[in-house]
Image (tube, rainbow, N blue to C red; front, side, top):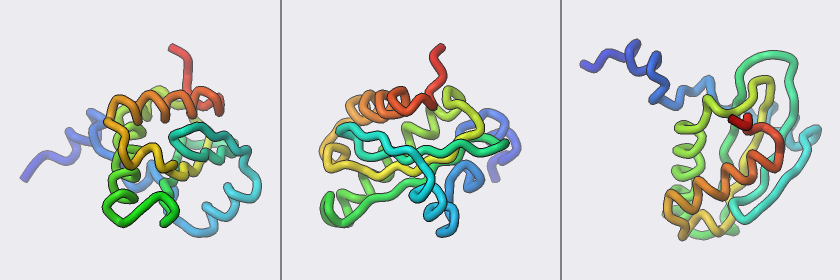
Amino acid sequence: MPNLENKEQTGHRLLRSYRIRQNRDYRRIYRSGKRFSNRAGLLYVTRVKSGDIRIGFVTTKKIGHAVDRNRARRLMKEVYRLHRAELSPNYEAIMLAGSFLTTATYKEAEKAVLALWRKAGILVQS
């Protein structure tokens, strides 16, 4: 059995606590969040008093069949997993996938998602 403590320390896992999962949180962010968009999709961002950044991932039937939606969601989660340390704390966000992500390569998706985060002001300039 792998050592889970070591994996958590290295930051290679996307823990549930890093994501928004409850319906009431989604509704609150949709209602009070600022909206940003580009070809990667929509991003609703709201500031919270304390805590690490948390993001929820949404794909709608408008962008395609289940295979396409799952691919778009996996791409968004992977970019978030790898770049989570570069995001500002004290924010909660919801990402709605755009149809661009159904056909994009990882590099294209990464570039578009990072541009969206930069536009929203949650990506720390390093």
